[in-house]
Amino acid sequence: MFSGIIQKKSQITAVAAQSGGLRVSVDKPQGWRLKLGDSVAVNGVCSTVAKLGKAAEFFYMPETLKKTYFASLKKGEEVNLELSLKASDRLDGHLVLGHVDAAGTVLGLKPEGESQVMTIGVEGGAGLLADKGSVAVEGVSLTVVKAGKNKFTVHLIPHTWQHTNLHAKKIGDAVNVEFDILAKYIKSLMNNSHAGKK
Image (tube, rainbow, N blue to C red; front, side):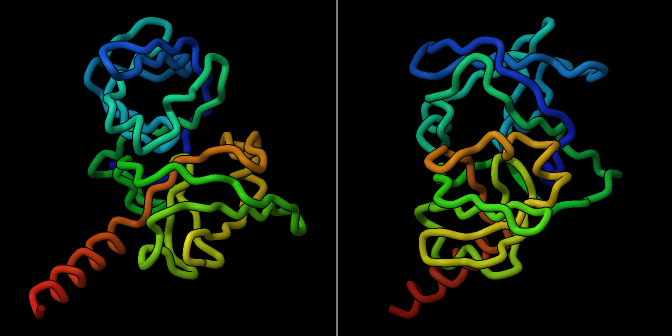
């Protein structure tokens, strides 16, 4: 489990298809003491450390490649990293599981004062996005400013813009989106309740 507060940015050092999945190596941040089996959020995707050296290697199975845009990852790309939470850690963002729901697309990007306004199109968000609710984009915990049927808008403060890979996104680029887990549970309960009445 994660909080959506990005701790480091790093770069992809290698990408290789294997057994229907994908092996991705990420330059290990200086000072990080990773071990095999550790969980790391990479652009919002909960990833298990499969091999360690100067880089940390992760393996992504076909289901992950379907839900995310990771099939198009390239060497040299900048990625957001967050270590999994300890029970004693502060929850500064919101509960992020690292289970990406869909790859969204940047539809709009414009400055507003010192912030950046980003509009993201994503399928499957109906009933899961609400004004002032939470959403994770590229693993970054953000507040939904305006929710639409298949899109939503977020405002990126200067710190978020500078310290995550969102500053490198352009209109048309893909981003990983995870809807708020509480919204998903509520929607599931409501759907089951309605189904039971039929």
